[in-house]
Image (cartoon, rainbow, N blue to C red; front, side, top):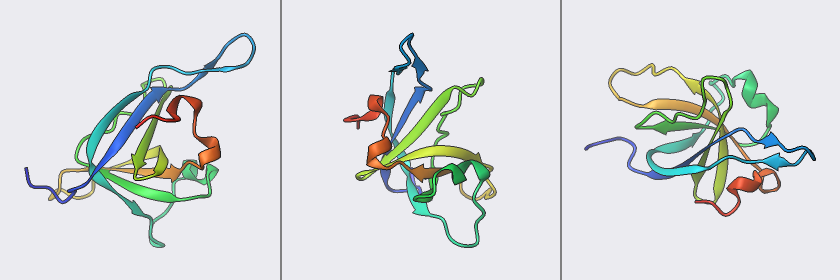
Length: 124
């Protein structure tokens, strides 16, 4: 299949962690799959969703040839993209405004190494 996105990255999804009776984080199962797409920096003409402002580092656009289902209906899901050595947290899904190219577009923020969730350390 011909595509403009001739690269691959890892998509990681998991439920939001809960806490045990001692206040320690309890992580759910992490699923990992390889996805065809691309990760690109935002340019100055694009607006950043408010949810992305919680992290002030490395806001990027993620284009994918398939839908990255990172949000559960109750909002309890988390999604991450690992591209090269970098891990990005998906924060928003944007509408497809291009009928010529079938793709999905997301906004993601770089996760600093010190803030990588314990369940994702060493994954992918």
